[in-house]
Image (cartoon, rainbow, N blue to C red):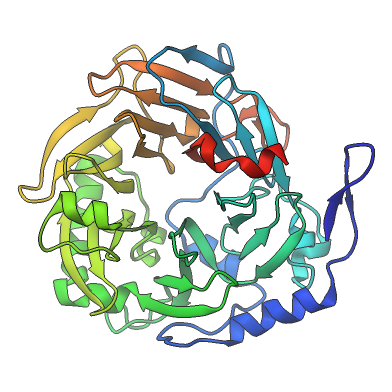
Length: 425
């Protein structure tokens, strides 16, 4: 377990054996599986090697001021939960950038039986990909391709699962956990070729697996092979810069969002509560999947490119972070799912263009503004419908082997202060 000592520094002691046994048991339990077995020791590294996009702790050199650089009266209230490339932790920040709370756990503490546990941190990968907060201050996070874990508010490890979780994570009001996983396998569409397949996984609050859907199987009805051919034509025409090696990364599924009853109502038929909104960057495609029937309810390929983080807009549209809007340019776009056309977009200005080759996201806040994450620049900002920035945060944290790069912001979520009663205690 991991507890603060009396000096305020983090003290450690070995994770209790029961936790490790429980974690292994969870991996072996599957109540409705059609996916892979538990990971081999080197599976994460092999998947990373085959991946089209390597995620790094930080890429750009720091320029200009850092911290909160814009704060206007029109910003939505609340605090921000952030994961960053500079360290394996999650931070709770107020709108002035002050750290209110920190959760932290090292790789060897979370996965003590992994062969890499004794190797020490690798600067390029020593961070959590995403974290989500529970009402009591507990936190569930993903260490990219290595595992899923749960901490209490004091960073004590409640459980950890050595599964190939990646990219995205959502906790629904009933406490269930939804996340992505990956595996290497040979598919009928890729004979003789080692490829990466993705899975949509649902778990109980204690980590036990309930259901998993295989992306290659679910998308087969809409001919993902044809979508893949179109994607590679777009790669050449639009200058994505992907090499032959990236052919093994079939889908690069990077987002998973469970539609609520409100989402389904604003989207209208045929969408239903519980449907899964997903993004496949290596197909330039977003889709809504019915997990009960295991079939695609709706899909759209482009005009966005290698996109991330589709979410439902209050007007019944779908907002997407379009990473390849133009050469060296990204954009936030809202699409009408009925016409498949963009009805709103923001790409920054000529002087300060929006751009993140990796990751990124945009999500609507309670006041109708958008919280935009520009991962590569370590920047997050709040944007009004008329495209005014009313809040902006530029990471003061540094990453990389020399700590000379701006730490990428990999996730940021605005949390209502009514959900922070545990913090006062």
